[in-house]
Image (cartoon, rainbow over all chains, first blue to last red; front, side, top):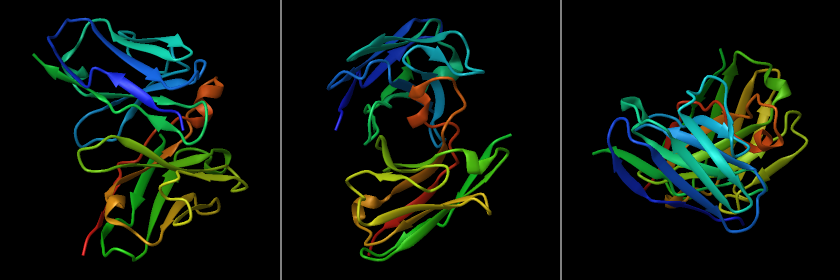
Length: 107
Length: 124
C-alpha cells in the first residue's frame, strides 16, 4: 500500500497569510495526487486533481504542485472560509489512501 | 445538481450486519464508478470500496475485504454497501462519492462530490 504523509499536522495562520502544506508518498505516484478540504461536520470538498489542476469552481488562491513523491498545496492568501482540514489522496493505485490531514486554524 | 443521499446507518452490535444505501440524482448514475469512504470519529479519511459503472469490477480495502460488499442498482440510481461481521473499528461516518468530471486519469480514482454521510456505530 502507498503511504501518504502530510506535514504539518496542524498550523495556525492569520487571514491573508500564505499557507503551504506538504504531502509525501511512500513511492512514486507521478502526478496522481488530489487534495480535499473538509470543514467540521461536513463532507470533504474536492479541490485539486492531478497534483496541480484546479477543479471547476474552486478559487484561484488554491494551488498545488509536485510529482513523484513530493507534493505541495498552497493557499496564497488565507480567507476566513479556508479554516478547515486539508487532505491529500493518491489515485495511483488501490487501495486508495489519504494523508492524515492538516488542520488549518485561526491564529 | 448532483445529489448523493446516504441512509441506513445506526447502532448495531458487533458481529451483526447493516446495509447502507446511497440515492443518486442529478447525473447519469449508470455512467460513473462510485466509491464508499469512511471516517471514524475524530479521525482521517479511509477509502472502503469502489464499483465500476456497470458493476463488472469491484475493489475493497483490506480492512473490509470478505466482510463488506459494494453493489449498485442502476435502474434505481442507488449504491449499496452490505456490511457483515461488523466490528467496533468499523464505527464511522460512511460517505458515498461519485467519480468526478475532470479530464485526467487522476480523476478516475478521486471523489467528487460526496454525500452528507451516515453514521454507523458498532457497539454492544
